[in-house]
Length: 218
Image (tube, rainbow, N blue to C red; front, side, top):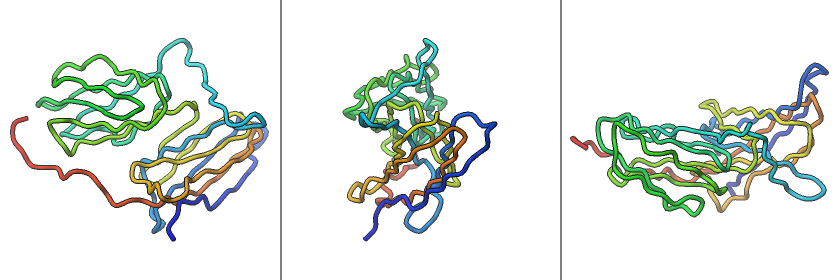
């Protein structure tokens, strides 16, 4: 049976000169191939249960950008904190529309080009699927997280999180994750100067993205 699993945990001391702790993650698919665009998050846990601690943002709202380039959303996967304002610039010479019907954020931006609409604030945790009603193949995912400690894997399937010492629940998310498989998670305790090395194997569903159609004009 295929499943999502965290198969390796290695704790190492980084030395007295290090500040905080570090979580290094390597994600792969069932064939062992590196998996990009995996969102890795670490939530504090403890005697009182799982907490949703937010790091200060110095009085300023965090921001992010998801661009429209060559009739694609860039990046395909974005991880942000609750309360982040996201801008959607259109760098194409054609009209685009951005919308989402997701429970965590429902919105629709009118057709536009050249100028960018006002930023969209994502105020609830969850996954938000983006689309364009002109180009069906344009799909992107926004993971809205309550924790300030998260990252996204590179093309080599690797990500690094720097966290304060403490107890954490580390989880991974991916748009193609097979939800019938068990949710991958690992709880660990990190002392100052420690480093955790985790490996996650993620069971994927078949690729589902509308085929990009050649077209002219808009």
